[in-house]
Image (spheres, rainbow, N blue to C red):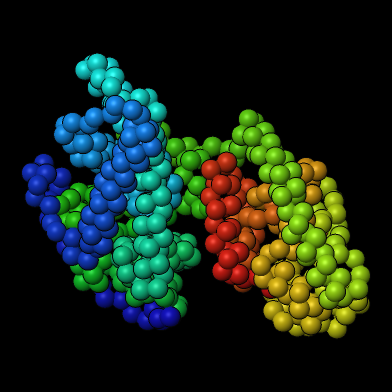
Length: 500
C-alpha cells in the first residue's frame, strides 16, 4: 500500500490531434500488451486442426465403411484444406479472434457457435448450387458439428492455459490506468483484481477531482494528478485507460480523450457506476447521440425458470438412482466411525423465506451440538457462518466427506422435492436470526447445492463477499450461467478449495 502525500501537478499536454480523419493503417504498435498475438496464432492452429480432424473422422466413420468409395485428390483438398480455411475465415468474420473477447466471459464461445451456423449454411448453399450430392448427409453433418465441438473444446483448453499463466506468472494481461476520483478508482480496482484470470492489472490512478481529500490515504498503486493521461500511460507502461464513474459523465471530455487515443495503440474502457450487473441485462439505447444504458429486471420467472426446475428434477432423480451404491458405502463408513444416524437434518431458510429441513451426510460426532458452546470463541469466519478449519467435532471420515463435498449429495432429495435447486445461494440455518437488508434478497430464488459462492472460494470468503456473490447470482441468473457454475464446481471439488 502507498500513502498519497503529494502529487506531481503539471499542465495537461494538448491532444496530438482533434479527431481529423487519417489513414487506418497509421496505428502505433502496442508497447506492452502483445500477449494476444501468439495466443491468437495458437488459436488459429487449434481451430484449423480441429476442423481438419473432424473431416478426417467423418470420412473414416461414414465414407470408408461405404462400399465403392473412391475419393479424388480435390476431395481431400476440400476436406482437409479448404473447409478448415473456411472455418478460420468465418470465425475471423465473427470476431472470434478479437482480443477483447478472449480469455473471459461467454462471448468467445457464442461467436464460435454463430460461426458454426454460418459454416453450415455456406456449405449447404454451395452443395445445392453445385449439385454435389456424392457425400452422405451424415458425413457432412458429423464434419460440421464435430468441428464446432472440437473448436469449442480447444478454446476451453487454451483459456485454461491462459488463466494459469495469468494467475501464476501475472502475465498475458492488460495494464490499466484508472481515471476518476479516488473512491471510484479504488472500487474499480477492487472489482477487477478479484479475479486474476481476467487479466486486468491496474498500475496507476489518475485523479480528476478530490486531490486534497486523497492526501495521506493508502493506495495499492501510485496516484497522479494534473498529468496528460496518454503521457502517463506511456510512462507507467500501460495499454488501457479505464474511465471510472463520474469521470465518464463530463460533457465532451470522454470524446476528446477517445480522439487523443486514436492511433496510439491504447484501449479506452468506461466503468460506469453500475456494479454487479451482468452484460446481458445492460443494453445501450442511443438517442440523439446520447448513449443511454437500459438495465433490465432480473429474470426470476418465465419459461427459463420452468426449464431450470425441470432440469433440476430430472438430474436429481437420475443422480439419486445412480448414486445408490455410493450412498450405501458412505453410510457404512459413517456408522463404523461413530454410532448414530447416517443423515444430518437441519432447518434451513429457503425460497421466499419458507423453512425446510436439509439432507446431508452426518460428518460430526453425535454430541456436536453440546460441544458448540465451548468453541464459539474459535470461530474463523464472520457474519452468520461458524467455521473452524480443524473442528474437533468432525470425525475422520466426516472430514474426508467435507473436503470432497460428498456430504452434500443427499441434498438431491431436497432438489427432487422442489425445496432446493442444483445451483443457487447456499441455504442458511433458520436459527441464525432474521434476514434483513440486502441479505433477504437471496430468498428470491431457491437455494442450491452449489453456487457462485462455492466456486469462488467457499469457506475462504468473508461473509460480505459471500453475500455479494449470492446477490450477483440472483440479479444475473440464467441457464447458461447455471451450466457454467456446474462446470466450475467440478474443478473446485477436485481441488478441494475452501472445503472444511
